[in-house]
Image (cartoon, rainbow over all chains, first blue to last red; front, side, top):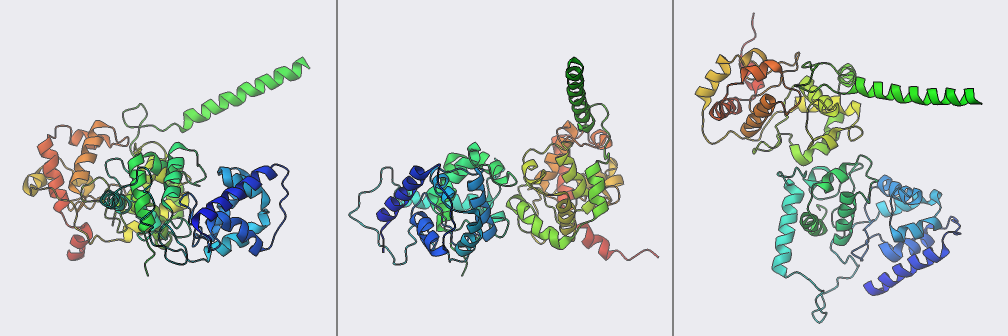
Length: 229
Length: 241
Protein backbone atom coordinates (compact mmCIF):
# COMPACT_ATOMS: atom_id res chain seq x y z
CA UNK A 1 0.00 0.00 0.00
CA UNK A 2 1.43 3.29 -1.03
CA UNK A 3 1.31 5.99 1.60
CA UNK A 4 0.04 9.47 1.05
CA UNK A 5 3.46 11.03 0.52
CA UNK A 6 4.36 8.51 -2.13
CA UNK A 7 1.07 9.27 -3.89
CA UNK A 8 1.72 12.98 -3.78
CA UNK A 9 5.20 12.58 -5.24
CA UNK A 10 3.86 10.21 -7.89
CA UNK A 11 1.25 12.75 -8.70
CA UNK A 12 3.82 15.53 -8.95
CA UNK A 13 6.02 13.31 -11.09
CA UNK A 14 3.16 12.58 -13.41
CA UNK A 15 2.53 16.27 -13.77
CA UNK A 16 6.20 16.93 -14.42
CA UNK A 17 6.37 14.25 -17.08
CA UNK A 18 3.27 15.74 -18.61
CA UNK A 19 4.71 19.23 -18.62
CA UNK A 20 8.02 18.07 -20.08
CA UNK A 21 6.21 16.10 -22.69
CA UNK A 22 4.19 19.10 -23.77
CA UNK A 23 3.47 20.34 -26.35
CA UNK A 24 4.67 17.63 -28.72
CA UNK A 25 2.76 15.00 -26.82
CA UNK A 26 0.88 12.46 -28.87
CA UNK A 27 -2.26 11.00 -27.44
CA UNK A 28 -2.40 7.32 -28.15
CA UNK A 29 -5.26 5.27 -26.83
CA UNK A 30 -4.08 2.98 -24.05
CA UNK A 31 -5.77 0.11 -22.24
CA UNK A 32 -7.86 1.14 -19.24
CA UNK A 33 -5.49 -0.58 -16.76
CA UNK A 34 -2.63 1.52 -18.03
CA UNK A 35 -4.73 4.66 -17.85
CA UNK A 36 -5.69 3.93 -14.27
CA UNK A 37 -2.02 4.15 -13.35
CA UNK A 38 -1.86 7.59 -14.89
CA UNK A 39 -5.09 8.84 -13.27
CA UNK A 40 -4.58 6.80 -10.10
CA UNK A 41 -1.36 8.58 -9.22
CA UNK A 42 -3.40 11.60 -8.21
CA UNK A 43 -6.94 10.27 -7.87
CA UNK A 44 -6.17 6.78 -6.48
CA UNK A 45 -6.86 3.79 -8.75
CA UNK A 46 -10.30 3.40 -7.13
CA UNK A 47 -11.05 7.11 -7.60
CA UNK A 48 -10.94 7.90 -3.90
CA UNK A 49 -8.13 10.42 -3.91
CA UNK A 50 -6.23 10.63 -0.64
CA UNK A 51 -4.83 14.04 -1.52
CA UNK A 52 -6.99 16.85 -0.21
CA UNK A 53 -6.33 19.04 -3.26
CA UNK A 54 -7.49 16.38 -5.69
CA UNK A 55 -11.10 15.35 -6.16
CA UNK A 56 -12.52 11.96 -5.47
CA UNK A 57 -13.86 10.73 -8.78
CA UNK A 58 -15.50 7.59 -7.42
CA UNK A 59 -19.26 7.61 -7.80
CA UNK A 60 -19.42 10.78 -9.88
CA UNK A 61 -21.97 10.71 -12.66
CA UNK A 62 -20.37 9.33 -15.83
CA UNK A 63 -21.69 12.12 -18.02
CA UNK A 64 -20.41 14.73 -15.59
CA UNK A 65 -16.95 13.12 -15.55
CA UNK A 66 -16.83 12.85 -19.32
CA UNK A 67 -17.80 16.48 -19.70
CA UNK A 68 -15.05 17.56 -17.29
CA UNK A 69 -12.47 15.59 -19.29
CA UNK A 70 -13.75 17.13 -22.50
CA UNK A 71 -13.63 20.59 -20.96
CA UNK A 72 -10.04 20.08 -19.80
CA UNK A 73 -9.16 18.89 -23.29
CA UNK A 74 -10.82 21.91 -24.87
CA UNK A 75 -9.34 24.34 -22.34
CA UNK A 76 -12.76 25.23 -20.97
CA UNK A 77 -11.70 24.06 -17.53
CA UNK A 78 -8.17 24.77 -16.42
CA UNK A 79 -5.88 23.19 -13.89
CA UNK A 80 -2.08 23.15 -14.11
CA UNK A 81 -1.76 19.42 -13.50
CA UNK A 82 -4.75 18.32 -15.57
CA UNK A 83 -3.65 20.61 -18.40
CA UNK A 84 -0.39 18.68 -18.58
CA UNK A 85 -1.96 15.24 -18.29
CA UNK A 86 -4.92 15.59 -20.58
CA UNK A 87 -2.92 15.91 -23.85
CA UNK A 88 -1.72 12.35 -23.18
CA UNK A 89 -5.21 10.95 -23.19
CA UNK A 90 -7.20 10.41 -26.36
CA UNK A 91 -10.72 11.80 -26.42
CA UNK A 92 -12.03 8.37 -27.43
CA UNK A 93 -10.92 7.05 -24.03
CA UNK A 94 -12.96 9.51 -21.99
CA UNK A 95 -16.15 7.51 -22.03
CA UNK A 96 -14.57 4.34 -20.63
CA UNK A 97 -12.65 6.29 -17.99
CA UNK A 98 -15.77 8.16 -16.92
CA UNK A 99 -17.73 4.90 -16.78
CA UNK A 100 -15.04 3.20 -14.71
CA UNK A 101 -14.82 5.94 -12.08
CA UNK A 102 -18.59 6.40 -11.95
CA UNK A 103 -18.89 2.74 -10.98
CA UNK A 104 -16.44 2.91 -8.10
CA UNK A 105 -17.78 3.21 -4.59
CA UNK A 106 -17.08 6.52 -2.96
CA UNK A 107 -15.39 6.09 0.38
CA UNK A 108 -16.03 8.53 3.20
CA UNK A 109 -13.41 10.46 5.09
CA UNK A 110 -10.42 12.52 4.17
CA UNK A 111 -8.02 9.60 3.84
CA UNK A 112 -10.07 7.07 2.00
CA UNK A 113 -7.43 4.35 1.90
CA UNK A 114 -8.54 0.76 2.19
CA UNK A 115 -7.06 0.11 5.60
CA UNK A 116 -8.04 2.53 8.35
CA UNK A 117 -5.24 4.90 9.21
CA UNK A 118 -5.00 5.98 12.81
CA UNK A 119 -4.00 9.58 13.35
CA UNK A 120 -0.33 9.76 14.20
CA UNK A 121 -0.15 11.48 17.59
CA UNK A 122 3.57 12.16 17.17
CA UNK A 123 3.02 14.06 13.94
CA UNK A 124 3.39 17.81 14.38
CA UNK A 125 0.15 19.73 13.97
CA UNK A 126 -0.04 21.65 10.73
CA UNK A 127 0.36 25.39 10.97
CA UNK A 128 -2.96 26.97 11.77
CA UNK A 129 -4.55 23.63 12.51
CA UNK A 130 -7.86 23.96 14.27
CA UNK A 131 -8.61 22.60 17.68
CA UNK A 132 -11.21 19.81 17.83
CA UNK A 133 -13.67 22.30 19.27
CA UNK A 134 -13.09 24.90 16.54
CA UNK A 135 -13.33 22.25 13.84
CA UNK A 136 -16.62 20.95 15.25
CA UNK A 137 -17.99 24.48 15.23
CA UNK A 138 -16.85 24.99 11.65
CA UNK A 139 -18.53 21.76 10.56
CA UNK A 140 -21.74 22.76 12.35
CA UNK A 141 -21.69 26.11 10.57
CA UNK A 142 -21.09 24.32 7.29
CA UNK A 143 -23.98 21.99 7.95
CA UNK A 144 -26.28 24.96 8.53
CA UNK A 145 -25.24 26.46 5.19
CA UNK A 146 -25.48 23.13 3.39
CA UNK A 147 -28.95 22.33 4.70
CA UNK A 148 -30.52 25.80 5.02
CA UNK A 149 -28.44 28.16 2.92
CA UNK A 150 -27.76 31.73 4.01
CA UNK A 151 -30.96 33.72 3.77
CA UNK A 152 -29.45 37.18 4.28
CA UNK A 153 -27.20 36.84 1.24
CA UNK A 154 -29.52 34.51 -0.71
CA UNK A 155 -27.13 31.57 -0.75
CA UNK A 156 -29.30 28.57 -1.61
CA UNK A 157 -28.96 25.41 0.46
CA UNK A 158 -26.44 23.10 -1.26
CA UNK A 159 -28.59 20.11 -0.32
CA UNK A 160 -31.45 21.43 -2.45
CA UNK A 161 -29.68 20.42 -5.66
CA UNK A 162 -26.89 18.07 -4.52
CA UNK A 163 -29.16 16.16 -2.14
CA UNK A 164 -29.07 16.14 1.64
CA UNK A 165 -26.59 13.25 1.57
CA UNK A 166 -24.58 14.90 -1.21
CA UNK A 167 -25.05 12.13 -3.77
CA UNK A 168 -26.45 14.46 -6.43
CA UNK A 169 -28.05 13.13 -9.59
CA UNK A 170 -27.45 13.26 -13.34
CA UNK A 171 -27.63 17.06 -13.29
CA UNK A 172 -25.88 17.89 -10.03
CA UNK A 173 -22.59 16.19 -9.17
CA UNK A 174 -21.94 13.93 -6.20
CA UNK A 175 -20.19 16.11 -3.62
CA UNK A 176 -20.61 14.08 -0.42
CA UNK A 177 -17.28 13.06 1.20
CA UNK A 178 -15.41 15.17 -1.34
CA UNK A 179 -11.97 16.37 -0.24
CA UNK A 180 -12.16 19.67 1.63
CA UNK A 181 -9.31 21.54 -0.05
CA UNK A 182 -10.64 20.59 -3.47
CA UNK A 183 -14.11 21.91 -2.57
CA UNK A 184 -12.66 25.16 -1.23
CA UNK A 185 -10.64 25.59 -4.42
CA UNK A 186 -13.60 24.91 -6.69
CA UNK A 187 -15.96 27.24 -4.83
CA UNK A 188 -13.26 29.93 -4.82
CA UNK A 189 -12.66 29.42 -8.53
CA UNK A 190 -16.39 29.65 -9.23
CA UNK A 191 -16.51 32.80 -7.10
CA UNK A 192 -13.69 34.51 -8.99
CA UNK A 193 -14.81 33.08 -12.32
CA UNK A 194 -11.52 31.20 -12.76
CA UNK A 195 -13.71 28.13 -13.22
CA UNK A 196 -16.58 28.86 -15.55
CA UNK A 197 -17.55 25.54 -17.03
CA UNK A 198 -20.68 25.19 -14.91
CA UNK A 199 -23.12 24.88 -17.79
CA UNK A 200 -25.72 27.24 -16.40
CA UNK A 201 -23.52 29.59 -14.42
CA UNK A 202 -25.47 28.56 -11.36
CA UNK A 203 -22.45 27.62 -9.26
CA UNK A 204 -20.78 30.91 -10.11
CA UNK A 205 -23.92 32.73 -8.97
CA UNK A 206 -23.99 30.75 -5.72
CA UNK A 207 -20.28 31.03 -4.91
CA UNK A 208 -20.25 34.79 -5.57
CA UNK A 209 -22.66 35.15 -2.66
CA UNK A 210 -20.47 33.19 -0.26
CA UNK A 211 -17.79 34.56 2.03
CA UNK A 212 -14.44 32.77 2.23
CA UNK A 213 -15.35 31.69 5.74
CA UNK A 214 -18.62 30.17 4.55
CA UNK A 215 -16.77 28.35 1.77
CA UNK A 216 -14.33 26.84 4.27
CA UNK A 217 -17.12 25.81 6.62
CA UNK A 218 -19.24 24.18 3.95
CA UNK A 219 -16.23 22.30 2.56
CA UNK A 220 -15.48 20.89 6.01
CA UNK A 221 -19.06 19.72 6.36
CA UNK A 222 -19.18 18.22 2.85
CA UNK A 223 -16.14 16.11 3.69
CA UNK A 224 -18.05 14.57 6.59
CA UNK A 225 -21.12 13.74 4.47
CA UNK A 226 -21.72 10.07 3.90
CA UNK A 227 -24.03 8.40 1.46
CA UNK A 228 -27.17 7.15 3.21
CA UNK A 229 -26.81 3.40 3.70
CA UNK B 1 -12.45 49.32 -55.14
CA UNK B 2 -13.64 52.57 -53.54
CA UNK B 3 -17.17 51.59 -54.30
CA UNK B 4 -16.70 48.20 -52.68
CA UNK B 5 -15.20 49.84 -49.60
CA UNK B 6 -18.09 52.25 -49.25
CA UNK B 7 -20.57 49.38 -49.63
CA UNK B 8 -18.81 47.55 -46.82
CA UNK B 9 -18.84 50.65 -44.62
CA UNK B 10 -22.53 51.27 -45.28
CA UNK B 11 -23.26 47.60 -44.60
CA UNK B 12 -21.38 47.72 -41.31
CA UNK B 13 -23.24 50.81 -40.20
CA UNK B 14 -26.61 49.37 -41.06
CA UNK B 15 -25.81 46.19 -39.14
CA UNK B 16 -24.93 48.31 -36.15
CA UNK B 17 -28.08 50.37 -36.57
CA UNK B 18 -30.29 47.31 -36.73
CA UNK B 19 -28.65 45.91 -33.59
CA UNK B 20 -29.45 49.15 -31.79
CA UNK B 21 -33.02 49.00 -33.07
CA UNK B 22 -33.40 45.40 -31.99
CA UNK B 23 -32.13 46.26 -28.52
CA UNK B 24 -34.56 49.13 -28.32
CA UNK B 25 -37.44 46.89 -29.31
CA UNK B 26 -36.62 44.14 -26.81
CA UNK B 27 -35.89 46.46 -23.92
CA UNK B 28 -38.38 45.62 -21.19
CA UNK B 29 -40.78 48.23 -20.00
CA UNK B 30 -40.64 48.36 -16.25
CA UNK B 31 -43.30 49.86 -13.97
CA UNK B 32 -42.85 53.62 -13.72
CA UNK B 33 -41.32 53.91 -17.19
CA UNK B 34 -43.24 55.28 -20.14
CA UNK B 35 -45.05 52.59 -22.08
CA UNK B 36 -45.35 50.12 -19.17
CA UNK B 37 -48.46 48.00 -19.42
CA UNK B 38 -49.28 45.59 -16.61
CA UNK B 39 -49.55 41.99 -17.78
CA UNK B 40 -48.31 42.76 -21.28
CA UNK B 41 -47.65 39.42 -22.92
CA UNK B 42 -44.04 38.71 -23.71
CA UNK B 43 -43.29 36.39 -26.63
CA UNK B 44 -41.80 33.89 -24.20
CA UNK B 45 -44.88 33.79 -21.98
CA UNK B 46 -47.10 33.25 -25.01
CA UNK B 47 -44.83 30.39 -26.01
CA UNK B 48 -44.88 28.78 -22.55
CA UNK B 49 -48.66 29.05 -22.24
CA UNK B 50 -49.06 27.48 -25.65
CA UNK B 51 -46.74 24.58 -24.80
CA UNK B 52 -48.40 23.74 -21.50
CA UNK B 53 -46.55 21.91 -18.78
CA UNK B 54 -45.77 18.42 -17.54
CA UNK B 55 -45.88 18.16 -13.73
CA UNK B 56 -43.79 14.96 -13.71
CA UNK B 57 -40.96 16.66 -15.58
CA UNK B 58 -41.54 19.76 -13.49
CA UNK B 59 -40.77 17.85 -10.31
CA UNK B 60 -37.33 17.02 -11.75
CA UNK B 61 -36.70 20.57 -12.89
CA UNK B 62 -37.79 21.97 -9.53
CA UNK B 63 -34.75 20.37 -7.92
CA UNK B 64 -32.74 23.42 -8.93
CA UNK B 65 -35.18 25.63 -6.99
CA UNK B 66 -35.20 23.60 -3.78
CA UNK B 67 -32.12 25.26 -2.31
CA UNK B 68 -34.29 28.28 -1.54
CA UNK B 69 -37.94 27.27 -1.89
CA UNK B 70 -37.35 23.92 -0.12
CA UNK B 71 -38.13 20.42 -1.26
CA UNK B 72 -41.83 20.82 -0.42
CA UNK B 73 -41.96 24.20 -2.25
CA UNK B 74 -43.42 25.83 0.86
CA UNK B 75 -40.62 28.40 1.11
CA UNK B 76 -39.45 29.61 4.50
CA UNK B 77 -41.61 30.88 7.36
CA UNK B 78 -39.38 33.98 7.62
CA UNK B 79 -40.88 34.92 4.27
CA UNK B 80 -37.58 35.48 2.50
CA UNK B 81 -38.65 32.84 -0.02
CA UNK B 82 -42.37 32.53 -0.74
CA UNK B 83 -44.55 29.51 -0.57
CA UNK B 84 -45.21 28.28 -4.11
CA UNK B 85 -47.44 25.28 -3.46
CA UNK B 86 -50.77 25.43 -5.22
CA UNK B 87 -50.05 28.76 -6.87
CA UNK B 88 -51.79 29.16 -10.22
CA UNK B 89 -49.58 27.97 -13.06
CA UNK B 90 -50.46 31.13 -15.01
CA UNK B 91 -49.13 33.29 -12.17
CA UNK B 92 -45.91 31.33 -11.83
CA UNK B 93 -45.36 31.48 -15.59
CA UNK B 94 -46.01 35.24 -15.62
CA UNK B 95 -43.57 35.87 -12.79
CA UNK B 96 -40.77 33.63 -14.08
CA UNK B 97 -40.98 34.94 -17.63
CA UNK B 98 -41.12 38.53 -16.41
CA UNK B 99 -38.06 37.98 -14.22
CA UNK B 100 -36.28 36.50 -17.24
CA UNK B 101 -37.39 39.43 -19.40
CA UNK B 102 -36.08 41.96 -16.88
CA UNK B 103 -39.55 43.32 -16.08
CA UNK B 104 -39.84 41.96 -12.54
CA UNK B 105 -36.69 42.89 -10.69
CA UNK B 106 -35.44 39.87 -8.80
CA UNK B 107 -31.64 39.78 -8.83
CA UNK B 108 -31.53 37.03 -6.20
CA UNK B 109 -33.56 34.62 -8.26
CA UNK B 110 -32.46 35.66 -11.76
CA UNK B 111 -29.32 33.47 -12.06
CA UNK B 112 -31.39 30.39 -11.31
CA UNK B 113 -34.19 31.01 -13.79
CA UNK B 114 -32.53 32.91 -16.60
CA UNK B 115 -31.80 31.17 -19.83
CA UNK B 116 -30.13 28.64 -19.92
CA UNK B 117 -30.41 27.85 -16.17
CA UNK B 118 -33.89 26.69 -17.02
CA UNK B 119 -35.23 26.19 -20.51
CA UNK B 120 -38.47 27.60 -21.89
CA UNK B 121 -40.05 24.13 -21.59
CA UNK B 122 -39.07 23.85 -17.94
CA UNK B 123 -40.95 27.03 -17.01
CA UNK B 124 -44.29 25.46 -17.86
CA UNK B 125 -43.30 22.12 -16.33
CA UNK B 126 -42.29 23.67 -13.02
CA UNK B 127 -45.45 25.80 -12.92
CA UNK B 128 -47.65 22.75 -13.61
CA UNK B 129 -45.87 20.77 -10.90
CA UNK B 130 -46.13 23.49 -8.24
CA UNK B 131 -49.82 23.94 -8.95
CA UNK B 132 -50.45 20.31 -8.03
CA UNK B 133 -48.84 20.63 -4.58
CA UNK B 134 -50.62 21.18 -1.32
CA UNK B 135 -49.01 22.68 1.74
CA UNK B 136 -48.52 20.51 4.76
CA UNK B 137 -46.05 22.74 6.57
CA UNK B 138 -47.19 25.66 8.71
CA UNK B 139 -46.65 29.06 7.08
CA UNK B 140 -45.32 32.22 8.72
CA UNK B 141 -48.23 34.12 10.24
CA UNK B 142 -46.68 36.96 12.24
CA UNK B 143 -46.84 37.25 16.00
CA UNK B 144 -50.21 38.86 16.43
CA UNK B 145 -53.57 37.90 14.93
CA UNK B 146 -54.86 41.06 13.28
CA UNK B 147 -57.26 39.24 10.98
CA UNK B 148 -60.32 41.37 11.80
CA UNK B 149 -58.59 44.64 10.92
CA UNK B 150 -56.88 43.01 7.97
CA UNK B 151 -60.09 41.61 6.57
CA UNK B 152 -61.72 45.05 6.77
CA UNK B 153 -58.81 46.68 4.92
CA UNK B 154 -58.81 43.87 2.36
CA UNK B 155 -62.54 44.34 1.74
CA UNK B 156 -62.67 48.16 1.92
CA UNK B 157 -59.82 48.53 -0.55
CA UNK B 158 -61.43 46.02 -2.90
CA UNK B 159 -58.42 43.69 -2.88
CA UNK B 160 -60.88 40.82 -3.31
CA UNK B 161 -61.90 42.13 -6.74
CA UNK B 162 -58.71 40.62 -8.10
CA UNK B 163 -57.39 38.35 -5.35
CA UNK B 164 -60.80 36.84 -4.44
CA UNK B 165 -62.77 36.74 -1.22
CA UNK B 166 -60.80 33.71 -0.03
CA UNK B 167 -57.47 35.05 -1.27
CA UNK B 168 -57.69 32.57 -4.12
CA UNK B 169 -56.58 34.94 -6.87
CA UNK B 170 -57.62 34.35 -10.47
CA UNK B 171 -55.85 31.86 -12.67
CA UNK B 172 -57.38 33.22 -15.88
CA UNK B 173 -56.14 36.75 -15.18
CA UNK B 174 -52.83 35.75 -13.57
CA UNK B 175 -53.75 37.31 -10.20
CA UNK B 176 -51.87 35.39 -7.54
CA UNK B 177 -53.35 33.30 -4.79
CA UNK B 178 -52.45 34.94 -1.49
CA UNK B 179 -54.06 32.67 1.08
CA UNK B 180 -51.67 30.93 3.47
CA UNK B 181 -48.69 32.87 2.07
CA UNK B 182 -45.94 33.80 4.52
CA UNK B 183 -46.68 36.95 6.53
CA UNK B 184 -43.31 38.65 5.99
CA UNK B 185 -43.31 37.85 2.29
CA UNK B 186 -46.72 39.50 1.87
CA UNK B 187 -45.54 42.67 3.64
CA UNK B 188 -42.32 42.84 1.63
CA UNK B 189 -44.04 42.39 -1.71
CA UNK B 190 -46.82 44.89 -0.96
CA UNK B 191 -44.15 47.46 -0.15
CA UNK B 192 -42.06 46.60 -3.20
CA UNK B 193 -45.14 46.82 -5.39
CA UNK B 194 -46.05 50.23 -3.98
CA UNK B 195 -42.47 51.52 -4.29
CA UNK B 196 -42.25 50.13 -7.79
CA UNK B 197 -39.03 48.25 -7.05
CA UNK B 198 -40.70 44.97 -7.96
CA UNK B 199 -40.82 46.22 -11.53
CA UNK B 200 -44.14 44.65 -12.48
CA UNK B 201 -46.58 46.47 -10.18
CA UNK B 202 -50.26 46.65 -11.08
CA UNK B 203 -51.01 50.41 -11.12
CA UNK B 204 -54.45 49.80 -9.59
CA UNK B 205 -52.92 47.91 -6.71
CA UNK B 206 -50.42 50.68 -6.13
CA UNK B 207 -53.40 53.06 -5.88
CA UNK B 208 -55.36 50.70 -3.60
CA UNK B 209 -52.55 50.45 -1.06
CA UNK B 210 -51.13 53.97 -1.53
CA UNK B 211 -52.25 55.11 1.93
CA UNK B 212 -51.38 51.92 3.82
CA UNK B 213 -49.43 52.47 7.03
CA UNK B 214 -47.00 49.91 8.40
CA UNK B 215 -49.79 48.75 10.73
CA UNK B 216 -52.12 48.34 7.74
CA UNK B 217 -49.58 46.20 5.85
CA UNK B 218 -49.17 44.05 8.93
CA UNK B 219 -52.92 43.65 9.43
CA UNK B 220 -53.61 42.63 5.82
CA UNK B 221 -50.64 40.22 5.86
CA UNK B 222 -51.84 38.80 9.15
CA UNK B 223 -55.30 38.19 7.67
CA UNK B 224 -54.08 36.63 4.41
CA UNK B 225 -51.43 34.46 6.04
CA UNK B 226 -54.13 33.06 8.34
CA UNK B 227 -56.50 32.22 5.50
CA UNK B 228 -56.40 28.52 4.72
CA UNK B 229 -55.21 27.27 1.35
CA UNK B 230 -58.09 28.45 -0.87
CA UNK B 231 -58.66 24.99 -2.29
CA UNK B 232 -59.63 23.57 1.09
CA UNK B 233 -62.19 26.38 1.35
CA UNK B 234 -63.68 26.20 -2.10
CA UNK B 235 -63.85 22.42 -1.88
CA UNK B 236 -66.09 22.74 1.15
CA UNK B 237 -68.51 25.03 -0.67
CA UNK B 238 -71.24 23.06 -2.46
CA UNK B 239 -71.29 23.58 -6.20
CA UNK B 240 -73.82 26.19 -7.36
CA UNK B 241 -76.89 24.76 -9.02
